[in-house]
Image 1 (spheres, helix red, strand yellow):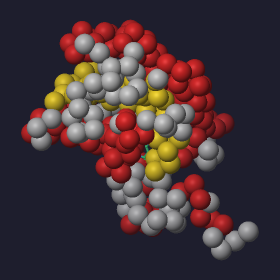
Image 2 (cartoon, rainbow, N blue to C red):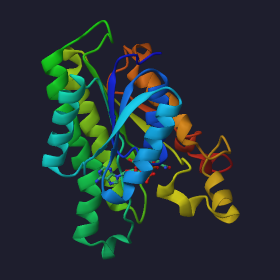
Image 3 (tube, rainbow, N blue to C red):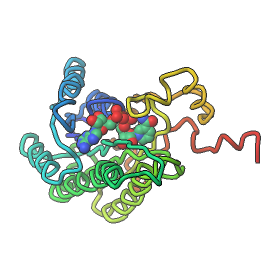
Image 4 (cartoon, rainbow, N blue to C red):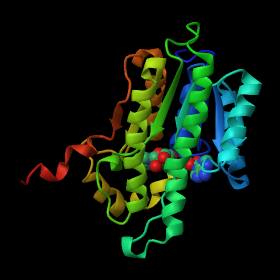
Length: 267
Ligand code: NAD
């Protein structure tokens, strides 16, 4: 029970990676706040909570659009009022809205930056205020709080046709490192997970046919697509005291995707 008595907010937790992180953290004793953005994802969030409760865990669901400042402030205030504090933030919510660059509308640009980058800024700011207020409580953790930013291999791999998404992930890297530099002296640990290709709804077109999957596997030296649970396990480690000396790091969980597999027989 590595996260016993800790309160964890996981954004975008009604599906995919966020869902797996919520289940993994709950199984380690955390009380999980399963965030979802809109009414149409409420039933999925409730289903995740049901799984958590059935497995003996604790949690609630909470609606909040992470790109809306008032929503985010309300979520943190409500959670702190109900549970007394927040110990862990997993900044996971993210969207893709792809387009050839010359046709990319400002709406598409703003939508992706708004959720993926501004959403992480808004949630991190509220979390850090609470971590600073509470300070270290050694009965729970050696640090005053942990933030895990869900980035991507695309914080370093350029991605044609996805300028908004790749830019948001590059921005997350610098946001994460800056926060880690600013708040490590306050015992707040900020790190990123950079998933490679994980089998979730966001990238269904890349794995839903054998042809697509085979072409995807060419990019993955470890020759399997990642599962949300691969990220859940990494997130538990980064949130636990087992990683107490890890500050400002990007943990790539990508089956080797960032090893430039195209160079195996070339170059
Ligand atoms: P997903 O589509 O299943 O999950 C994204 C979640 O974000 C959804 O639950 C969605 O409801 C939520 N969300 C969207 N807009 C929101 C908003 N405004 N406020 C709150 N929540 C919102 O896809 P996923 O693969 O689980 O993605 C999770 C994160 O992992 C994203 O940040 C994504 O960029 C990142 N990621 C995924 C992969 C992959 O291969 N699946 C790879 C690298 C990074």
